Amino acid sequence: MNKSSAFKLGLALVLLGGAGFMIFRYFQQDDGIAENTFFYDLSEKKLFAAPREALPPIKGLNDAEEDAVRAVVIAPNGNPKDESARKIAYLEKYTAEFKRQLVQVRSGQADPLPRGARNTHRFVKRVEDSEWRALDSPEGEKILTEWNVAGPNGKYPVVCTP
Image 1 (spheres, rainbow, N blue to C red):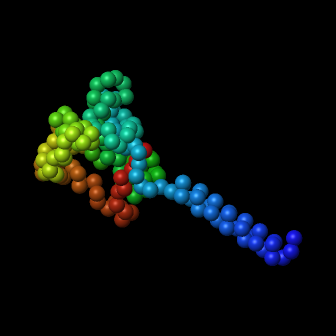
Image 2 (image 1 turned 180 degrees about the horizontal axis):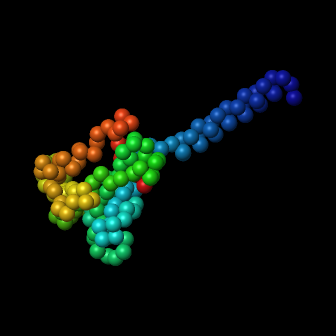
Image 3 (image 1 turned 90 degrees about the vertical axis):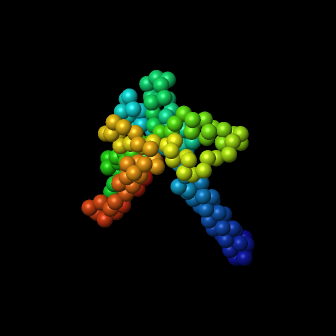
């Protein structure tokens, strides 16, 4: 093998290795969109993962009762990989009417409700609260925003996914 052929072979191997590395990185890339989100079983008082498209409340962990609601889980220290620091910022559920409407919208059988009308069908609460608050109420708005403040380390909480 002459020098020119050896150079071309070496160059081809380097390019092939680089392409392989780029393909590997592409498939390992986190696009930031999670397939699952957290839900909280109200009767079991436990978090679990379910498809993010699920409309709360959904069936919980222990029976057929729809007693699991969406849980917005945060890492107050700004590090979502630190599972020990995670906490539930708030819980969310929809009215039965709104769930039916969303199913119809997803199947193309209905138009979406205007944004303001949607919020009257969404309810939030803290884990320790006994009452659910309408998302468009002053109490509901407070629950949605009160957790998003910088901690002692100066970092803001980050929403976590399973």
